[in-house]
Length: 242
Image: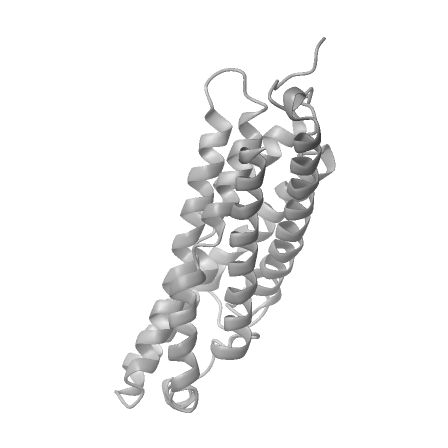
């Protein structure tokens, strides 16, 4: 009972911070959609002069909320551990991967905050910080992949676990989400088109698939935890009787 309640608390913690972080991107950083990668330094500097206050507030908010994947990954890892009779390889990978996700989520807001901290500096320096932020966000693909590999594997292997939150269809969608993040590294090579940092394949596809993924994962986790709580004695036994 205590474990299930704690898992709910962690999930709500992570989901609340996810929402706040996303709203900061949209309303405070003004990065939905991101400025074009073709903007010259003078235009980028003007953008930061116009939005200096809100970007600094956004950086503050993101400093508090950008670790939202940590509590979520803990719950995912706990649920994956129910599938593992031996060494907890996949649950460990899921937790470590979820924690690694926080790196490319926290760094861009810090760089934007630095760019907005002294908006009257030389435009080339402001442009450098802006480019560093955008490219850090969209090109750090592999930091997102590790947890999804663990989830996909657990979803796709034969499942005899009572009230598992990992159906086979979710494994396919998780694998698809991971693949949608891979084109992001190509943003180093393009300033326009689908592979630029504001393009369809480098930015919009990963953002949309991630949003759908985290909503689906939350629904599956809450549903599974409720069922496990309702039959608490059975839920403590990982495998169904043969």
